[in-house]
Image 1: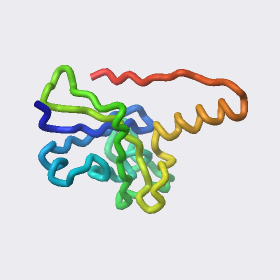
Image 2: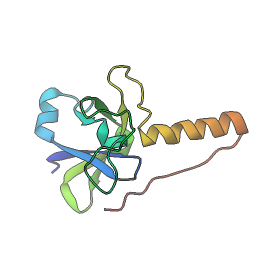
Image 3: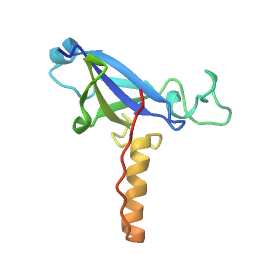
Length: 130
């Protein structure tokens, strides 16, 4: 059975950001939410080619962003039956709003703007290749 839950997000360079949490730990806390966070710099301050800060950004390595799972995306990985994966949105814990660095949040805002301002709708889907 499942022993780990992997929380997934994508940064602005389309790099997968992921943390695996033992299911035992999640069961002890009795919830899947508010378990994972990432440093803000992982989303907008590190280039895809290295581990050095991008000059001129306002992101901070000390600030954290909370990762909140979208339970409708929870799946067991077909190649690793002991690991489940769930896609997440990234929130600023100081405001509890979706972070401007969250790519899922950006997509949601673009779809809403297209519908409200232009009367058009899109059906989109994400495919992660492992």
